[in-house]
Image (cartoon, rainbow, N blue to C red; front, side, top):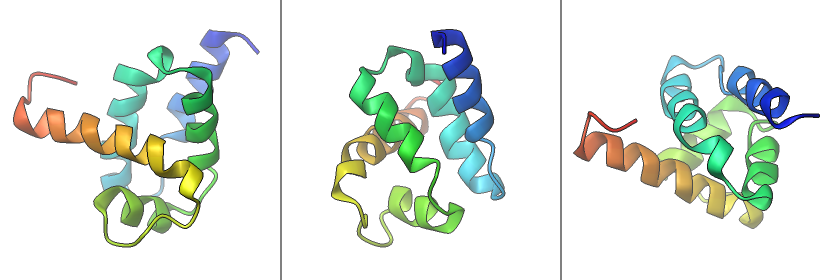
Length: 91
């Protein structure tokens, strides 16, 4: 799979059943995914295989992350979204 195919798959995978989750994942993929190291890309792929409600709760910090290996990618998504809140011109 080429990098562009992988990126397009993750763009599609970031479109979820919860609009709120779409608003957290899709901008992260657009702005950050291609620049991630391979291990973070692998973690993101595993993250999007999880249930929407679980992903949302982890990103929002409502419940502990059940798989500690996903902590890094969830932290990156949180940081990206926090930066957007502090500076809406960033995406």
